[in-house]
Amino acid sequence: MARYFPSIDHDILKCQLRRHLKDLGVLWLFDLIIDHSPPFPDEPVTYFPGDDLFTPLARRSGIPIGNLTSQFLANLYLNELDHFVKQDLGVRAYLRYVDDLVLLSDSKARLHSWREAIEERLQTLRLRIHPRKANIFRVHDGVDVLGYRVFPGYRLLRNDNGHRFARRLRGFADAYRQGTMDWQDFDPSVQSWIGHARQADTLGLRTKLFTATVFVRNGAEGLSRTVRGGSWNNNTDWLRSSARNRNNTDNRNDNVGFRVLRAASPPWLTESVCPRVGRSVQQGVHDPFSGLRREGKAE
Image 1: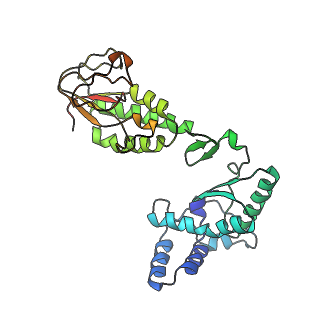
Image 2: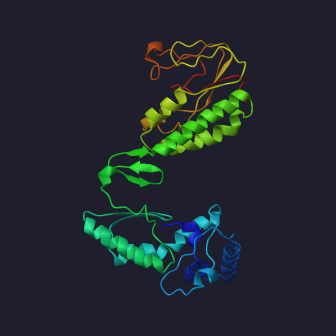
Image 3: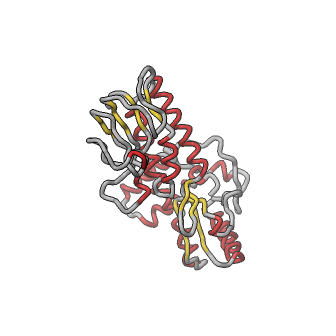
């Protein structure tokens, strides 16, 4: 959809709520939340069939993206469209996540007719399809949805996502080196990205990113930037990045982890990351080393 959250019409949304809810107190609370939505002054004026000159100015629209209630209301707003797509159009393979719609068919002509029907139906909700994103293409070319490129047999992370996180990770390393950020300041952000990335085939990408990044304070000594053949000091705190679930051993993408490892003596890299080292692992080092490491005291 084009600017979905700012385009949600308040009167239409309230009518939809009354079709599903009968408790007057709950309806009053929802009305209060909707009426206190902030204005969207930069939203372009859009006319729909039946509007007069002042209709777009008289009707309030838009709900805040960040509100938890907005996620529920945004899903409810297109509930009628779901029934229209499934029951009236007879689409068998249909996916919707908030305002992202995916329809699958073996016929290109049928997909074009569905798109025209959906565009016409959306006008009754005062919504428009995004002019550049409503495309028809082969599934073998990959479907861009929910931050991934989804193919019939596998998933990839979108290129812009990987590049954006690489820049952020370098920024975290620079801030840590200068002392303006500490580990706990950026660890949740790194963990969040790993949780998203590991849902796709990104083992090589994550290994490359975390192997190339070293977290070290200014003035610290003794930690090499290379994985192989580096020098390590005693009492080094090794930190690794990770979204690994210890109870899940089936997913090979879980090998890149993120935890604090303390070693009283120089730790060895495990065979899965550095075959030259062999299987010898020092006490306290339990999992394959990811390459994301820090020198200094652990928090």
